[in-house]
Amino acid sequence: MTTPAVQSKTDELERYLRMNIEDVYKNPNPLNFWCDRQKKFPGLSLLARLLYSIPVSSAGVERQFYFAGLTISQRRSCLDPDTVNDVLFVRSIKRSTSVRARVFH
Image 1 (cartoon, rainbow, N blue to C red):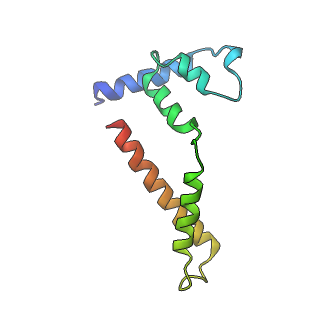
Image 2 (cartoon, helix red, strand yellow):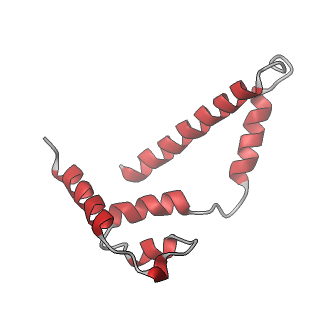
């Protein structure tokens, strides 16, 4: 059995999937579309802002390099590059989901 909140999100997604998008919104910046439809699709527009927003600084990239440096220390200098990528990926996903959890609750 679905809850009313889940049902309303499903209805919102179904309405979006059925709609015909005008050519004016078929451009590289999807945020214009979601800004104009924020009242009609509040959940999807919030998700779009989270996914398509560009950080105002390169702090995220610098943070990744910092943690890469911590991961590849002198003791771990022989780590396989794929393992390093996996460790950094899991860390970034963990951080991302904790940020989204705070936004949605």
